[in-house]
Length: 142
Image 1 (cartoon, one colour):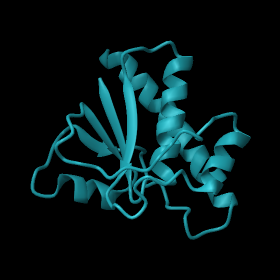
Image 2 (tube, helix red, strand yellow; image 1 turned 45 degrees about the vertical axis):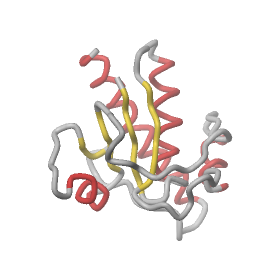
Image 3 (cartoon, rainbow, N blue to C red; image 1 turned 135 degrees about the horizontal axis):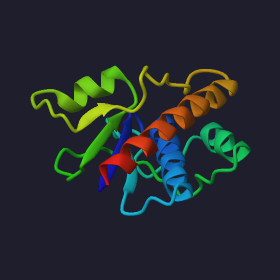
Image 4 (cartoon, one colour; image 1 turned 60 degrees about the vertical axis):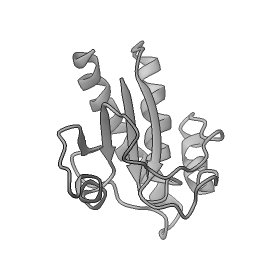
């Protein structure tokens, strides 16, 4: 199964989601799920994760150092596409609604980019909660 997590620039929310979901799947012993992330825009393609996002991950025991931003391509074959907010969901389904494109969390995951450093910790907490829920759902699907 291939899962793509999508935000705007692929330097804050979606890479945090990728790192956390991948770690939680491994922790749960769930194999056969490839988790990647990308952004709807191409401004940061090739850039590492925002340092504040990487620092928030490190504080919780995750490693996001290998991340490089990518832009989402509709041609990619994914079994599940997780949008970080309703704006991403609308963009990803524009002209072609799909049941495999859904929100990552019950509520929009806010963009911490223009906020204070502690906003990244708050977003990470929301990402961890949603990732736990996705682990349960994916376990049932596999």
